[in-house]
Image (cartoon, rainbow, N blue to C red; front, top):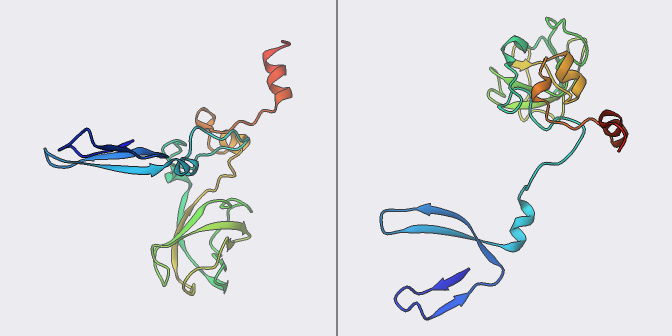
Amino acid sequence: VFLVNFTTPANYTQLPGAYLSRMTNGDEDSATFELMSISNRLNQNTGRVVIPTCDADVGDSRCGVNLAAFTVTSTITSVNDQSAFTDSARGEADDFFNYSKLTFTTGNNTGRSYEIKDFASGVFTLQEPTLSPVQVGDGYTTHRGCDRTKATCTDVFNNLDNFRGFPFNIDEIELMSGPA
């Protein structure tokens, strides 16, 4: 990258350790260039991380699952504290909502979403406490959770074609491809 005075192009200075990151067009006579240091590249993702579990969020564009059939809307019937409360109307199996988000639709936390750490016998336990107190009658919406495993993707969501994980270890890959 060079710093150039366009009125005297022979006078220029090289900017060591910088690169052009982004260009934005202005009007017909201008453009804006963003310079970044080379160390900034360490903060950027390049490629994918190979992990056994899926790296998509359930229901996002890469996952492709339509969550409408897995979504529930209800109200809180009792409160333990700001991170645990009950909906006695919930009859789903334990762990059904684990790893999903609960979004408050009414009450002090309207519009805020929290990750569900555990669901058992109608009791929701959140990963972190809510910012404002939860009250009986607060409305919420949530959906079936996903633990990002191949088994859940296949058995629960019938979505193996969009599974983004790499669940096979080296021995399994060798068995699948045959001897070298």
